[in-house]
Length: 545
Image 1 (tube, rainbow, N blue to C red):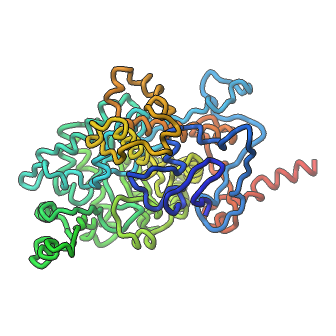
Image 2: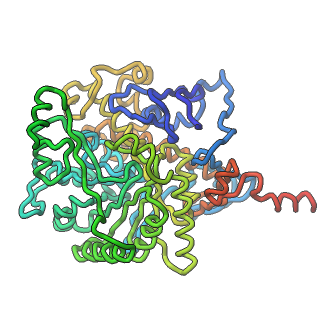
Image 3: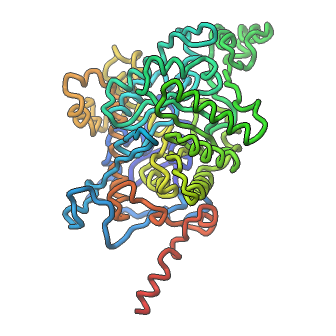
């Protein structure tokens, strides 16, 4: 593993055990710090560099690579050349500086959706974390200019939503989520609404189409990298569990059973798990899956959706090929491929540990399969890779591994952290707002107070956000959105630096030759050349010239 619990160079510490992404395996909304992502949400791009400049030197400790993971890929650097400089710039050293690296990207078929940086959020659905911190996530993502995904089951779990004859007619929570994002949308990014089995039955597509039209991208969901069954939430109210059961969900244990109610009354049962249904259970072959998928896409287009995407999980190779081929044939705008290691708000823990294909293996095969279609002359669907990403080097590696098909990297848990810490700071500094923003702190902990005691002092990007929205509007911007911008700025700056070192000044210039494998096993699994083999022949030509 690349990450230990503490990083002396950056002055960061993980509260829990770090995963492959660098995040704790269990990320708490009330955490007082201070992992790299948490601290980056406050100090931003400062965390790209070792601390205590002037009295320290620093040395890398990630030079021995064992096993197959994104951490066993390394990034190429070159001593000459410059590729993809924006219009008006030359290969003069004064122009070839990392701030001139263009991070904008776009995806889509007939309608192109632009993003300022190659990021999108994971699906933030019916978990209560998503609901409580939605303003921070949505406003932050909208201001930064990246796609934000509303996950599954939002309509079904909303007690205020109204369903008539099996179809949604009123959905205050879904409306709130869409409207919050669109308020600050300026042409970059998009709001994506995801549908699972229950959402399809409840008529979410029809509702969204009629009310929002082409302002929204609609997304079909096959699965995710955290689990191979439908989405779950946990509720602690018997009344709410009964409501969800009547809404048609699977609730475990069954709250309608008298013995379960009695156990709940006595405290032996304290919570209920609400599950979604599996999709595709009535489909018997690949051909049938294809036929039904194409019907679903055609129906969505008939409703007026001009942009449609698909999210798939870490299934085996057949399902991966189906997702890429069917999405390509249907001319979908985006396919998100979520590998195991993917995050969740609620999944069976041992399922997360044991099921599915790890991200790097899945993504390597996704490239291979996309290349097969491209060799046949097909216009391959644009891809987004997901499953355990948090840092700027992982963004570079994922885009390079899937180049030229990968346009975005999807981050779930990582870009929720600024929402948490920002809300906690806002609640601590403004007790009257604490409940509204779901703040968990009564006062600033030392990890924050050592940085500052006002938002202007704490958030490195405070005045960047103010410049964008204006001083008067800042009162409506949650601190979590400011933290979101701050983290995104750090990731963007770090990515620019890595790209400049690879002499790539535009995102579409990144290729698979910009990374190499740090061990032979990774080379075998990914098709990425081992580091000392890359350019070895041309090196020997130089020596023999």
